[in-house]
Length: 82
Image (spheres, rainbow, N blue to C red):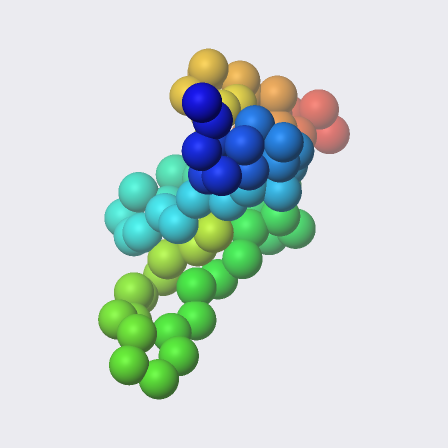
């Protein structure tokens, strides 16, 4: 029997789910041209733990990264201009 959480995960589009990625692991993701447009800086409120340079990254982009997809890598974009 599905739980409310598994139902939520199944029915939520992958482009609206985010993972919190902390420094230094997020540094490599910053090399993709989608990073500034799609990732959100973590802001701590009240008594929450402050995480220096942590970003919310779309799950779909993490899947692309894990699969080795470099089509949106900044270096590839710069090479196309030369």
